[in-house]
Amino acid sequence: MRTEATERAELVFSLFDANGNGVLDSEDFDLMTGRVLEVAVASDDGAREAIRAAFRRYWTTLATELDANGDGVISVDEFRPFVLDPERFGPTITEFAEALSALGDPDGDGLIERPLFVSLMRAIGFAEANIHALFDAFGPDVEDRITVTTWARGIEDYYAPDMGGIPADQLVAVRAV
Ligand SMILES: [Ca+2]
Ligand SMILES: [Ca+2]
Image (cartoon, rainbow, N blue to C red; front, top):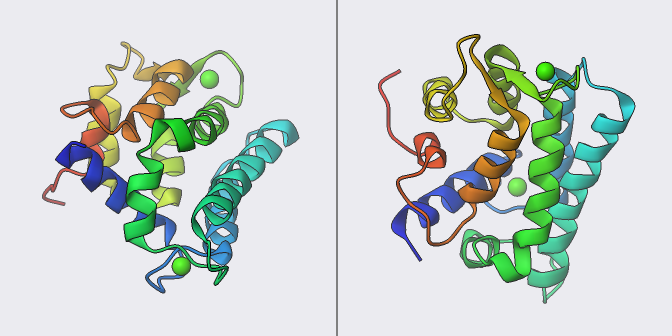
């Protein structure tokens, strides 16, 4: 497992701990879903339901696979190796990546403009400078747009245990703000 992958997993754990109690629990995912839907105002009902379902699956997969003692919470030490295991968590991430990237494209032309990308990623909790660095690393076109596919693959790569030096690492890099 690469250091970059470990750092990416730890960052997403800290952001998804939306209620700040140091562990992941069901309430975190309700809060996160609400925050993302709040900025996905231009998306249709199908796209909004898809991200709701994807967040729900993310949580239920963690709860089902990891919470053996049934106390309803997941620690970072449980989370890290599990989410970086493509065999066990890959399909959940693929659904999540498709649902989240689709929110970036409410008009369905396959392209995502920077302002909406920034809004969605800020809603999840990433830092603004890192979000812009990620968008730049995705290689936007002359009209400052990236494709839905680029973002979806970027999300899947974020959870890849053996990948480093990839656009997703921009989210972890320490930047002056
Ligand atoms: Ca929590
Ligand atoms: Ca679009």
